[in-house]
Image 1 (tube, helix red, strand yellow):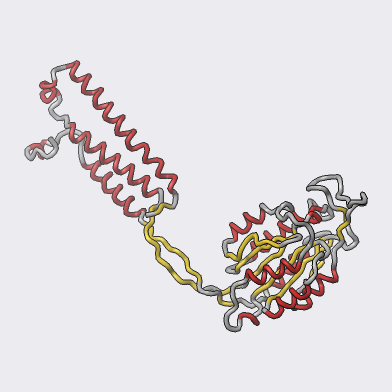
Image 2 (image 1 turned 90 degrees about the vertical axis):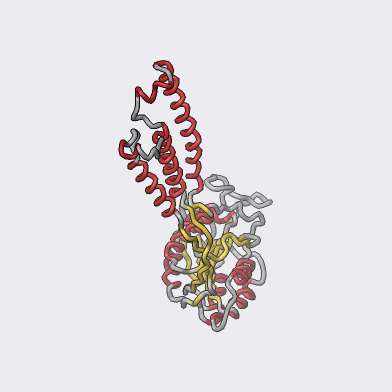
Amino acid sequence: MQFTHIEVLLGLLLVPLLAILYHLGRLGVRKKLKAYASETLHPVLIPDASPFRNALKFYLGLAAFALVIIALAGPRVGSQLKEVEIKGREIIVALDVSNSMLAEDIAPNRLIRAKQSVSRLIDKLDRDKFGLIIFAGDAYTQIPLTTDYSSAKMFLEAISSDAVSKQGTNIAAAIDLALKSFSPAEGDQASGKSRAVIIITDGENHEPGVFEAAERAKEKGVLVHAVGLGNPAGVPIPLYAGSKDFRKDRQGNVVVSKLDDKTLRRITEVTGGIYVHSGASVTGLFTLMEQLDNLEKQEFKTQVFAEYDERFQYFAGLAALLILIDFIIRYKKNTWLNRFRIFE
């Protein structure tokens, strides 16, 4: 058995505590009665009193209390496996996290605004698989393909320019990693235009093989789109987010990052994708988001979901029954039942 809110079970610690307090109270009452009169006289002085009924009602209430706590914890058993087939697209965003993304020509800086835009993209998805790759000099999978959009946005928020130690802009590595991250193509899915890579970058490509990577994407039926951030004329790169000092080369010159429009445009042309230059804003990604609606939705490989059989109602029902019994039983002896001596 599993529990949805297992922390609620901590309330069961009150059960033995209440039992101890109850018995301590009983002992106190007995001592007072003994001080008042001999124990043999108690049935004469209080003939209707029934210690058994008193204890029974307490333990019925205590058991009902424990059952309510268990019910609130959400008990569930087993798991039933259910196969579900869904239709949707597979979209992988390759986000540049190099130091140049800290440039502030797009307030507050390029990386933060790009992350905000990707978050907006996730909000628009419906039954689609989303994945995120971060890259600079190397490329890494940050979020494997998933339909858990809440978790995706949580991991997206944690991304920073420190996530990739090797600096540079290796777009080819990002494309190749994305191609490995898609679900295996089945049937005519490879030509269905249901899978896309969106490259979001502001820098010049520093590694060879980018066009060859685009050709590989074309062969696999994957569309490669690109969003170019920033100013093609170049802007200085802060030492860190919010810094007023800029990065310099070995000769002491301020490093300027220039957007390579031609390379990004050519990459998208190879696969039939779309290139958008955002300039000093991120509206380009919103334009691209509209184009993603044209992607054909393909049937994903059967996914398996675990479904649990809830059991809280049994505990709640039993608790209600005990409360009803407790309500019926009186503290005093019942003269009619007295002859049967049930509660003596």
